Amino acid sequence: MSRFSLFGKCKVQEGERDNMVDILLEAAESVEGLNECEIYLVNVSENEPNSVYVFEVWSSESAHQASLTLEATQTLIKRAKPIITGMERIGTLQAMGGKGISSYA
Image 1: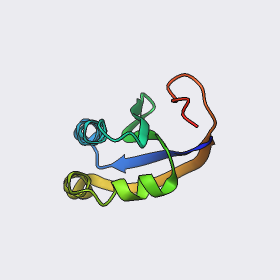
Image 2 (image 1 turned 135 degrees about the horizontal axis):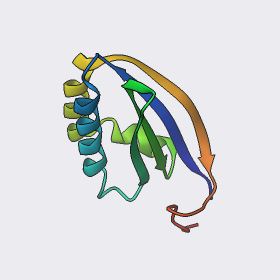
Image 3 (image 1 turned 90 degrees about the vertical axis):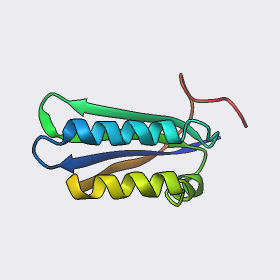
Image 4 (image 1 turned 120 degrees about the vertical axis):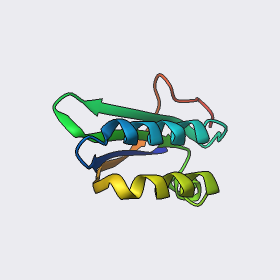
């Protein structure tokens, strides 16, 4: 069974990358108990000091959309908005399996 995967990039104001990383790591903690979220990875690149990348794997796109309506998520979005200068959806994928992905059918 394939899952909904999302790879995105958040561009932030100069010097705010660590703050954005902290916010996104809180987001990762907030979805820890959601079985629908299998992977939520926060990444940075040495070559892009004002960007943070997030890779997510969800049971479905609707599960991902539902997570955006949670109170905890809305609170984190409000904290992040003032420092975000741009968002880019690098791609959406269908995760088919592998290390880190459950084998439920």
